Image 1 (cartoon, helix red, strand yellow):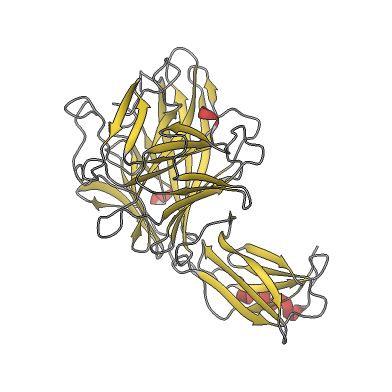
Image 2 (cartoon, rainbow, N blue to C red):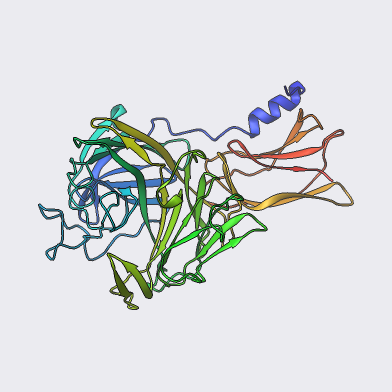
Length: 442
């Protein structure tokens, strides 16, 4: 247990607390998003837009003015046909984020052969406001093909740049069904001028005990696609958008995925709990798909993808999956995951993630003639007054040093501080809405 002086305790309480939240927590309002009737939640940091009628989609998630999700401009504002399908029976790819059953495939009835999916993807979901308008529950219709009904409760976090999801899959069939829940998120990989964003990247922890020799499995496209590689030194699977079609599955056990728009430093984070002793669809807890030129084998045939962005737009999919759930008729399975957003100030990797934020450059400490120099680069999930907390060899707090500026998810927390540690200090801990990083002192 930490022990500290009254002066140190008061200093920590003053500098390390989150900034005051809004007087009244925001609620969902009914409005419009690109011509669709939408449910919108907005705080000073993030915005969430939900359109229940187009397959229960979260159609946009924004950090300040940065919109992360891709929305199909050709379908914006269009209501779905009664049968949930395009005129030719194909997929109405509205974009945004939605739930699908996994695994995908065309070999047998234990695989989901979509998209398209006339019910779970293409038809309206029921929307119910919960907790006085502070949460939304979306419920699909019963799907006879997969035998399931999806629902999910979406709850934004008023004191964080985050959203919590509770996804439930119910067996509505008369026989057992076995599926995973697939949170399928389409991110916008175009620049503001409409060209491809070649600084669009993603990172997730590499499983040191991966079942895949490369640390990931190629699901679609060429085996040597340069968009994907494993960085074993840093323990990451790294993804670069190059407009080359392909998809990989990653058996990542770290519980987070971070997608970075290097043009402005905005970071979209998906967090989940990995179940090490359970089986996952495709053997993967994380999957990435890139729209682009090239050839894939899907729907039991070879498909040559268009190299024209007007026909094959710049889309970067970052997907997280639940373990399989085997459900008897009437049984349900619930899976939790979350989104967060932050900014790291440019084209930097994300090497770690925790409850407080993301780390782009680890906290480092070096000796100077006058004391210490602390450096690092971070993105935070809460508006807060950050500080450096000094700890002794037993991790007991000795005191704290305020950084002298507020931190916010909208702006990177770039640390370059000259300071003097108190006598007996052995560790410096960066506190910013929680413990964000720590380093042993030289």
